[in-house]
Image (tube, rainbow, N blue to C red; front, side, top):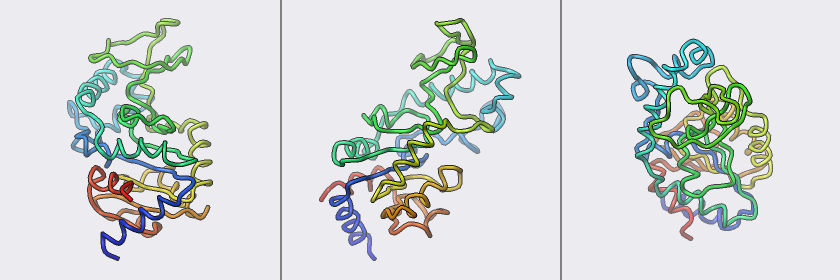
Length: 243
């Protein structure tokens, strides 16, 4: 099936869809210039992301971890949503049931206007108190190091799911409920290697959803999906809504 006919098929499926779930990963934000913060992109002062994004690292040296997150926040603060983010946000108003699941922590989906979403790995623009557990927005760039809770004076940490931590139960429940009820699922810019998100496509498939993958290259999910389009999310996703 050629690219044009595949695109037409997806447009037809979207036009008749009642319940749509979208799963996004680093690829959609890469089109806005957001680094992956893994591998070479995440190397900072000779530390890898896996060395710093852990509860143990924060307990051992919270100042170092906050300096790294401040560096990340300063980079992300210069980025803006791209046409793929905008198209996903507009889907909220086009379907009776819609839910966005994102693995990204950059907040660009919210900046684009998405409100029906689960940020399953957290949000870099939110902070959580290590004492009273209160979660608040914080857009300070640079952020005070070390930041303290305005409610109780406790040390704040990034509201991020770190290596070794479990995803929030409410996010998992909302995501799985959306996937199980969807008749169309878009998987955009994710490698399909990181669990539990790597298993979300299978949940939607088992529920009978039509699965669409949009990514630069084939992924571990490609054998599962009904159709795949290879290219940049910012170029492809807006086309899906053009009937």
